[in-house]
Amino acid sequence: MTVSLQAAVSACLFVSLLVFAAILWLAASFAIPIILAIPVGLLVAAVVGIVGISYFFSRQQRIIDCLTDGIRSFKDQDFSVQITHFESIEMSDLILEYNRLSTTLKKQRHATSQRELLLDTILQVSPVSILLLNQFDQVVYANDKAGKLLNNNKSLSGLVLHHAIANADPKLQTILLQKESGFVTFQANDEKQSYYFSRQSITLNHQPHVLLMCQNLSSEMSRQEVGLWKNAIRLISHELNNSLAPISSLTNSANTIVERSAEEQNHALIQLLPEMLATINRRTENLSEFVAKYSEFARLPAPNITEQPLQPLLDTVGKLYDFTLLASLPVECAFFDPIQVEQVLINLVKNAHESGSKIDEIGVKLLVDYQRLIVVVVDRGVGMEEEKLANAVLPFFSTKPSGTGIGLSICNEVAIAHGGQLKLFNREKGGLMVQFDLPLVAPRA
Image 1 (cartoon, helix red, strand yellow):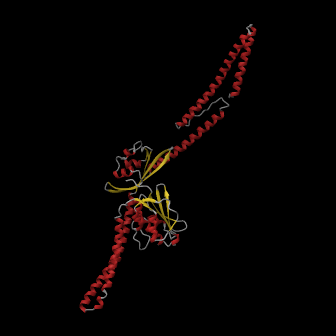
Image 2 (image 1 turned 90 degrees about the vertical axis):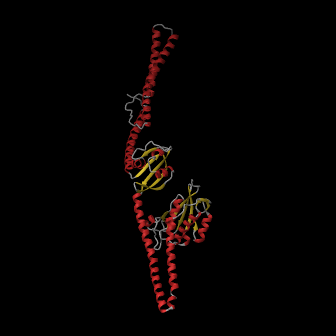
Image 3 (image 1 turned 180 degrees about the horizontal axis):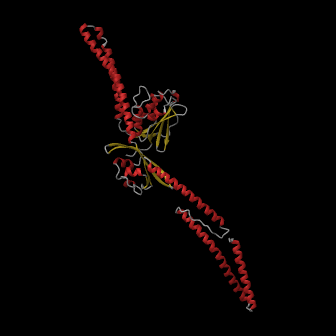
C-alpha cells in the first residue's frame, strides 16, 4: 500500500495528539497535577510523532539509496539496476522515469555494442593499417594489420608510439615520427614496398587524439609504373622514329648527291645540300629538346624555400599570359622557391590559354586555409574527361596529341616538394580548376 508524505505526517500528528490526550486523561484519573501532566504528555507525544515520521522517512531514504546506487552504476556502464517495489506516492513518478531511463540506456548500450563490434570487425579485416593515439602518443587502438606491419604481429595497444614501431622498417619509423602525412617507398624481402600514411587530428571523448592510417600501395604502384614505362617507351620511340627516319633519309640523299656530283660535276645538286643539312639540324634540335624535357623531370632539384612576395610572382606570369586576378591578395608573402613556383604558375595559365577558353574567363585566385596558401587557376575551356582527370599528373600521360606528358608531372612534383599536391577539378558550367598550395610559415628544418 502506497502512503503519501502528507498522509504519513497527518497520521503521526494524529497519533501524537491521541497520546497527549490519553496522558492528560490518565493524569486526571490518578489526580496527577496538570502542571506536571502537560509537559510529560507533550514530551511523550513528540517522541511518538518523531518515531513515526522517522520510520516513514527511513523508507523514503531506502528508495533514495536505491536511486543513488542505480545512478552510480550508470557511470560504470551498468544499466541493469531497476527499482521494482516502492511505497511512496511522491517518488513514484521519479522511480518510473528512472526505470524507463535505465531501460532506454540499456537498449542504446546494446545497440552501440553491436555497432562497435561490427566496426571493429570491419577494421580488423581492413587492408589499411589503423592506429589511434591519445594525447600522450599512446596507442589506444590498433587493428591486426597495423600490428603485422609495425610490430611483427604483436599487439600495439598501450604502447607509446616510439616503442610500438621499434621493430618496423626505419623509413616507416621516420615518417611516423615526423608526425606528417606522406608517401614512403623501401625494399623489403627483395621487393619494392610503397605505403601512404595519413595523419588526422580528431577529438574523442572530449580529448585530443590522432588517427593514423597506412595503406599499402605496392601492387597498385607496380601496375602504374609498368603502365608509365610503357607510355614512356611508346612516346620516346615515336619521337625518336619521327626524328631519326628523316635524318637517315636526308643523310642517304646527301651521300648520293655528293657521289653523283663528284662523278658528274653537277653543281646544281650540291646546292641542295645546305637545305638538307638545315633540315637535319632542325630535327636534331627538336630531338635534343625532347630529351631535355625528360631529363628535367628526372633531375628536378630540391626547392630553395624562402619567404617571397606574391605580387612580383603574379606580375611576371601576367607579362607572359593574360589572366584576371579574381580577388585581392589575402597575404603579401608566402614561403616557396620563386623559380619553381613561377614555372608552375606559367604552365597552368598557359594550359588555360590552350584549353579553348576565352581570355577574359581565365582567372587566378589566392586563398588562405590555416597555414597554407591555396593558388587556384580556372578557365572555361573544354575541361577534361574523368578518366584523364585522374591520370593527368602522372608522368608521360598527356591529353594533347603532341604533348610529352611532363608538364603537369613537374608541376605536381614542385607542389609535393612544397608540402602540397596538384589537384584538378572539372567546373560545373564547363572548364577546369587547377590548384596547389604553398606554406605560409617557414618549413621545419
